[in-house]
Amino acid sequence: MATFADVNQDAVQLQQRVERFHSVRENIVTQVREVIVGQDEVLDQVLIALFVGGHCLMTGMPGTAKTLMVRTIAEALGLEFRRIQFTPDLMPSDITGTDIIEEDLATGHRKWTFVPGPIFGNILLADEINRTPPKTQAALLEAMQEHSCTVRGQGYPLPAPFFVLATQNPIELEGTYPLPEAQLDRFLFNATLDYLRPDEELKVLSLTTTTRRPNVQAVTSAEEMLDFQQLVRMVPIADSVARYVIDLVRATRHKSDNAPDFVKKYVNYGGSVRAAQFVVLAAKARALSRKRYHVTYEDITSLLIPVLRHRILLNFHAESERIDTDEILRRLLRHMPPPREI
Image (cartoon, rainbow, N blue to C red; front, side, top):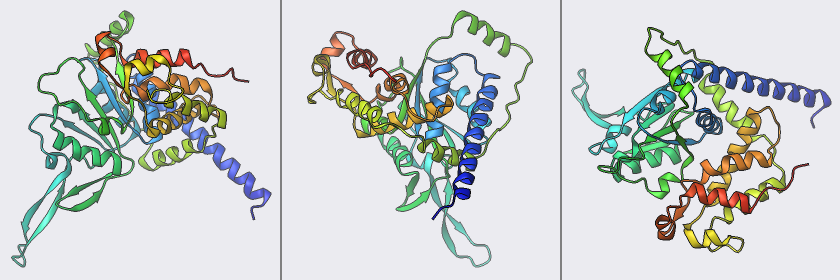
């Protein structure tokens, strides 16, 4: 039975962990801001994904600093960073590693030796992930879901924590392989990077066309990131807020009783239970990042679109009328506004 002293000690330790979380997050943002200009919403979503332990898909035009942002965040976290440039001829063994035959010079015997591939890191940048064929995408899917890979029937665990931050170009379709729905569903967010404002572009020029070289310092460690992931899961969520998440996700399914007419008209498939799980986890990380210790309706509504935009499949009616998933989700939020918070 716990004593009052034990309870007080646990409360003090928990408060210290929370304060450390806030300090590390602020330091990460400070370090990243030495290199990256703008893209505040995308940076926030990537950090939420890391604190949750999820993966993030980043979609944007060439030159919007997708790769640079991921590399800078990895340096600020102090984690092992690996980058894979996905191409049409990339094979599964090129990312997972392979077995080679080595000869023992002392005994003359030969044996199989596993040589790890670039997937064995903490943060994996999958650059232009939609350029590789389905066979290689399937190998990455196993790593994303199971945090392990299989080579010649032998399973190998990946380092912890393990994050996949993938990028894709939305305008080039030739020579690309659309990501299968099962793999898209493993990404916590589909973050979209847009063009910067004129003043932000001017700042980019001043930062990148001189002799200035930013020095990004690591502010945390792998062990601490794992602790932060557990801390995020401890954030409470009220039953009413959780039920609102369920109602929103169920409303994206055209066969659901509470689906609005525009969902029944334009949507083929809606979000799954995993979508609701990711909305709640992301909302917990967002609440803690803003120094709150409970999830609010505003956390849910602000994250619903990036969590669900890649999980909803539209039909030909939506395509013919040029309606995308973001528009469907915005309509859904207007149709089902959250209750007024007390």
